[in-house]
Image (cartoon, rainbow, N blue to C red; front, top):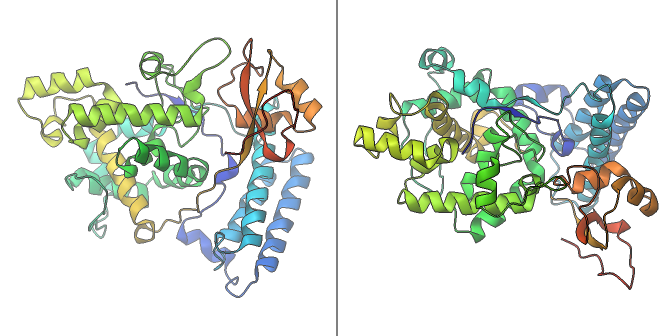
Length: 403
């Protein structure tokens, strides 16, 4: 369906969360803390980060924001079990995320981040068997991944598990796990509704790092990296004002439908379906015709593009790690899906003006509506996502609906 490219790897701090185990030691000594004490430590880091941000010290701000969220997640308290901590955690990551979006709007680039950075696929596509063998760890064991679809535990999968767990790919994994918190529950829900194996949501880890702003040089866009033609094929509108490939919910629905179609086309062979998701069904069909085989591992050498050769085992490795993160030394933060309301605007509206009128930040409206390409709604009526507490109760318009 597309190709290498650039993704927006902004560290949307809904994701500034899990650290690898080797980094957790510096946060030790919190096992006996109460929720209130943990919140106090996190708030102290957040205030330091906020002060640093306002002083233009973005790298320091980013580190303090990291530590604010990490101080919660490395404690022995379950965020989901403590209502107090759950509410604070949600508020904290919303505040940090708004600073992140606002920083991106700055001409100097904000938190030393750019909208488009090299995609994980760029590095993965260039890896040779020799490169993977160099990082292979003889002690890495796959065991039973427990995925909800069948695949072969080929040597290349083990090599990529080692690459992500012990090699240069670890940073990619950590960043993806952090950013997954906002969308993975939504993805699982939609994949389940579309009868697609829910473990396949981890495609987003390699495709975009779970970022709706991801944009490749080949014009693939969004969390699921749809190129324009495939996006239109699965009902995603694209025009001067709106690009629904960046709409998290609509694009996820389209990705699930496309994967379901590919799964049917290849009779439940998800290795072939994944290969086709990456390089297109025409490429895979041609490889099958030339090789006479429908086994991905036989097609892998000599019949498929280098990127696709690495893409499938890399995805399977990500899924294997995500299924057993502790086994490979990772921490996956609990999922989080921000609540919002919807409000119908009757005519084309500038988000900056609307944000000022509503008393909310422009960045918060932008963050909730990533499909809007120009900072304004399209001409005519448009259903806009707004911060739930701020949705206006105007009797002449539909009332905000919580999601």
